[in-house]
Image 1 (tube, protein in one colour):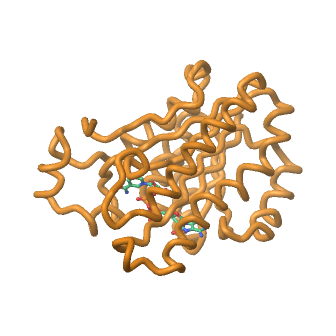
Image 2 (image 1 turned 120 degrees about the vertical axis):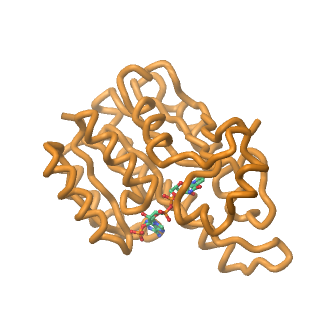
Length: 239
Ligand code: NDP
């Protein structure tokens, strides 16, 4: 049974990804930060349904805290599937953006990617099979007013995806990013009302977390073995 780690599994999209990977037969390590109870509840639900999962928590920006949790975990088993999904946004038009808003968003997305991914690499490379999926955003591809920090952070994640993909391609490890558009979660509901969604999205609806999870599940599967270094958009037709 392959072990998968999903950061931000306590959130809306992360939870859907955890359910999908568990349904595909993985043992899922459901990560949370402040929402450990939500991650535990999800793990219990997955186990009650015949799947295999457990919850764990750390702040992805705190390298020492990440190491304290991942080191004993990696001594027990190799994580062969990693979904870097934890993310925040903290929007403001750029002239009014504080240094704290800039640094917090960069810290979670960019430094969080490093803190979680780097320790997993050597064991994953030794196993000669791996899947890394980074959850990016359409904001990195098109830009978005009020999201200079978020777009920059997700853009850095896209570039890291491409560079790491080249480093590990010969080891049977793929590294891809998924760039969702508007997905029906609390994160997007505060930013887009129904009128805005109808105007912006050719399909005239938000996507669901499950639709994102299905794409991530495919990228994490054996069938996606020749897809790497890609940024895959999932956005209802926004070109
Ligand atoms: P949620 O706010 O529901 O979930 C965010 C997750 O990130 C939570 O599990 C949260 O943990 C975790 N997290 C936040 N900060 C930290 C931190 N410092 N350390 C560890 N974990 C942290 O968001 P969504 O499910 O909507 O989004 C998931 C991903 O999808 C994000 O990367 C987001 O940028 C991206 N995305 C979302 C879109 C949307 O429309 N919703 C569109 C495009 C991209 P906890 O709650 O336990 O504290």
